[in-house]
Image (tube, rainbow, N blue to C red; front, side):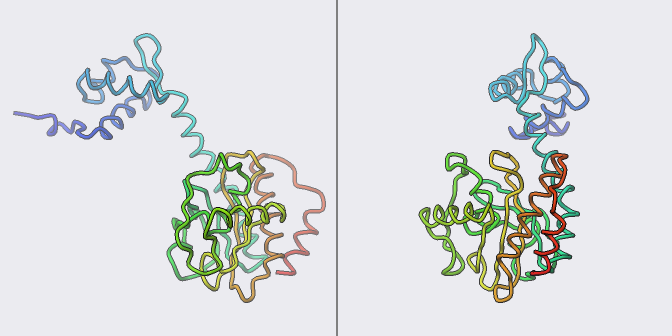
Length: 267
């Protein structure tokens, strides 16, 4: 006697939802009967799941047919946007690394943490949190605070304040607000001097103006005792702006080359 499991039918709710959504791959519209058959689900289960997905905006219903909803396209477009940003950033990151000799990170704000998407440079070579795929509390990192400074507090994700690794880290909401004020005074550049990790200074600038939904930042890090924070901050701010111009298809600003040359000589 065969069972649903032996046929590979989805068993968990997540499996069922995934199986149902995969039906739309290559088929813009499907009826309930078609969805249930192709997803290998009982018709009643498929109908119940579809009703909930319609309520959430993941699926839309038109008469007897269903199609993927705008919420699915919205989420998919964010993935495409982030991948496009990554590809746009790479040449600027390599150029910034060559001109400053410092390590460059591309990071994104994910909930209350920053996720490092890319790194150019081998230093620091200790700690998984500095490697691509590593995460750091947003309040403890220069990249996180650069992004938060661009947002109204109502737009902040849920933030946590775990004990910082050093006495220089941000401990409280009051400290965070004070630091974000300094970030704005610097034109959007965040400084973290041994606050996240002892011996490491990082500077960061958000990519894109206030109101942008990218929530990504470019940062430079180096040894605290030799890092020229002011000059590095100017360099990372210009590079972040150049990335935004490139991603938006806008022309670079006049005089940029001279400013970059002066800054990188100082680094």
